[in-house]
Amino acid sequence: MMPIPSKPAFSESFAVFSKVDRRKLASWPELLQVTAMRTAALLIIAGAFLVGCPKNEDAPTESQGEETPPPAQEEATEVSEDDTAVPAKYTVELDTTKGAIVIDVHREWAPNGADRFYELVKTGYFTDVAFFRVIGGFMAQVGISGDPALNVEWRAKPIPDDPVKASNSRGTVTFATSGPDSRTTQFFINFSDNSRLDGMGFAPFGKVKDMAPVDALYDGYGEGAPRGRGPSQPRMQTEGNSYLRESFPKLDYIKSAKIIE
Image (tube, rainbow, N blue to C red; front, top):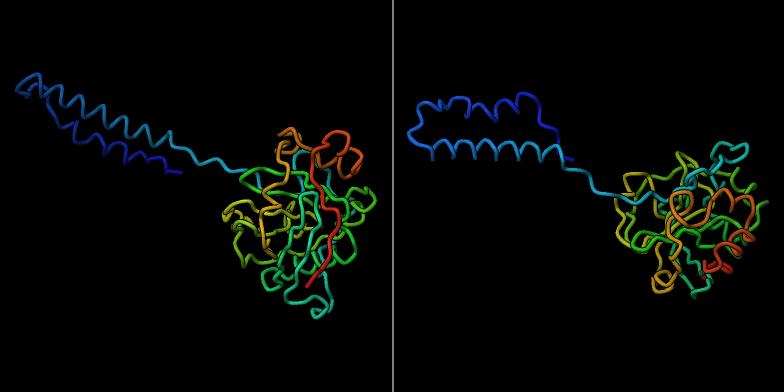
């Protein structure tokens, strides 16, 4: 945003005109010229007050709108006690209603995020899980279980933040967050260059090999409630997939997930 001109700068802008003595003007054309110069200066300075910041989409968070905080949220803890338990690089295949989405995970990009994703895949968490917030040109968000009991369990297991080492470019995969050290199960896939999220602490941990299935995800519901006509995260947490299938039948889902490399 352009800075608002300070008071001295405003005065200086008119200093040159204050020295003009209209009585000494040789003709009306000179008077008109000075008047035009003053008007132009006013328009330039007024423009500085009217310039605004560009509009940004809301960041992919776990607390959109009225979402309630997790029950008895515990301190964030390291996901893996033994760093060797999770490979430095591994590949996950998400079997979705739009086809296979294959993700290459790089632990060096975000160790805690990569470890949590590995744990979720291994335990079968991503079974019948909806892409509930799909915003064209921005990102596709997923990760709230269709089983309310699982949501209660995992919301009490946040992980520590990772430093941002990779940028949120098209195809990168990143955990959503509701604040410092609050990542749990929700992640998103970037449709475009969202590098502005880097400075907000969103640390990518992997990248999609082929974006065709991601680009095909249904995005007709757009932003979630209460800002948009899409699903309400609080209701998803407590009512599960029964709420989604009744009210948002066109959503796409992760049917299952597995590690393939």
